[in-house]
Image 1 (spheres, rainbow, N blue to C red):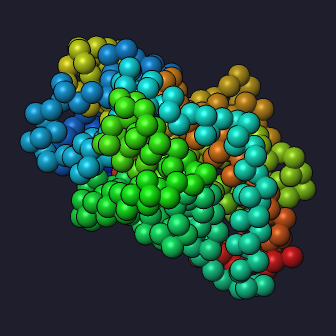
Image 2 (image 1 turned 45 degrees about the vertical axis):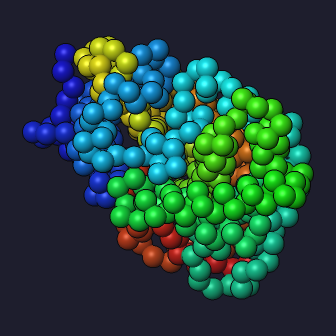
Amino acid sequence: MDAQQGGDGGGAGPLVLGPEFKADAHARYARLRADGPVHRAQFFPGIEGWLVVGYDAAREALTHPALLKDPGPAARTLEAAGFVGHKPKVGLGGQMLEADPPQHTRLRRLVSSAFSPRRTAGLAPRVAQIAHGLIDAMPPAGELDLVEAFTAPLPIRVIAELLGIPRAHEGDFRRWSSLALQVAHPEYASSVASLHGLLADVIRSKRQAPADDLLSALVAVRDEEDGQLSEEELAGTAALLVIAGHETTVNLLGNAVLALLRHPDQLRLLRGSPELMPGAVEEFLRYDTSVERTTHRYAAEDLELAGVRIPRGAVVSVALASAGRDAGVPGDADPAGLDVTRPSARHLSFGHGIHHCLGAPLARLEATTALNILLDRVPAMELAVPAESLSWVPAGMMRGVLALPVRYARG
């Protein structure tokens, strides 16, 4: 059969994933799912493809042997559209997220030990210390932007310390990495160039004065184990770790707090039973994930996905945010609702298959630790503006509010 088309599953052309769609994403995804699990979409001016919105179809797409990261079959389309997001240096290529085996296997192995559950658990005291410090820096009461004061600085400080990036660069990395995930943004090219340039400076300093950090370890692999890591792969991997290591968690924390402020009954439950937080984090990931959709996959051959014919060279992306709302379990009467006691919060927020997020243990640790501390230390908190007036990331693969104004009082 053919895929449904139209902005909400019923129009005459492919849906456009622009600011209007993203601001109302969950309602629009619900309408799309009602019409089918796979739809035509425009991902970038001049680039149309297929968007997967159903949970089962998403799992299939994420592990389909013919949906690869190699852009070769779609090269003409990408070039004609001026799309560079998959390229090294001018985009975010040259790293494991944009690689297929065996390159993917080799690159992932080089950094996997740094994100093991055991090593990640050892970061808990430092994550807690950072969270307490950020709350201590807030005035005792008043109004502020929680993104600026808490949900953004915490993850960037954690990943910067893990990688060995000087604190003076945290603000620059935060700004540039956010724009580097919005390929259609007018500042995309300059932000990617600035990000790569600053990382090159940091890498040079690690060569001159190695330290006990992940970037120094990667530089050593590049310099001492010839063939294990090219200079291009070193730069690409460093960029990926900076971006994926904090941008996803910034929005996970912001989306979680917003969800709780909009569901005060769930907020009361967590305040009274902080031991529920690990399961609640899974629910936040399912309910409103920070990675709205995946990077592109490319059809290496003609294939069929959930009954939809997809030709060789087609671009495919998976809407992880939609899949989470479609991941009901027997007896679950409201998969679209927020329930921090949900026994099985099935989601694909960290992906599925070989590209499952390497930093998932760290993201879970940061969210569980930071949210419990925030709810304990700030017992009075409410939105300072109507939820409907909040501005969302307008383009790209991420989902999150740009600012979260709250009225609060510390305990």
